[in-house]
Every structure is written in structure tokens, then in C-alpha cells.
Length: 119
Image (cartoon, rainbow, N blue to C red; front, side):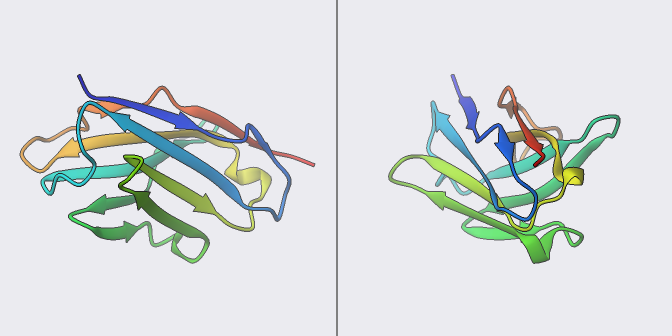
């Protein structure tokens, strides 16, 4: 059974860097036909795709690309998100999710981690 588990700081001050990590169990993140993705949901808003690792390549949302860095640690079976220069508008629940190349929707999600940007 595949499981994804996010971990994050909970509270970040404005202008600082937000870092969240997704720990994956039940299968390797190096499998080439899988998309590993960061998605967030801000209060009162819909889901926002932030970026994806696929087959070793990383794809970013155009609107967030200048502030976002996604990486993976294959030895720990984890992938991570860093978001720089945060503002209160970056307050959201941050989710990691997995999608197969062969299926439509994301089939596995983490439970989400709340990150609040506030001084």
C-alpha cells in the first residue's frame, strides 16, 4: 500500500523560506511512470498545482517558478518543496500526491500539512 506523508514547519514568518517534505512508503519514487507532485489549497480557494517530478525532470508552475524549488532524496524515498520569500498569501494546506502516467486522477495523496505565514 502506497502512503504519502507530509511534514512541515507549521508556522513561517514573512520573507522566510517554507520547506515541506513528503515521505513515501510502499514504492520507490524513482519509478519512471509516476508523477510526484506538490499541490496547495489556500483558505477559500481551489487546489493549486505547484510542481511535479516526473522521470527525474522537474516541472514548475509558471506563477511560482521564481520562488519554488523541488527536489528528491532517493536514499530516503522523499521529495521536498521549498518556497522562498513567503507572504501571508502562501498560507495554505500543502499536499503531496502521486499520479500514474497510465491513469487520469492523482491516486494517492498525503493528508496535507497546514503552513501559516505570519509574523
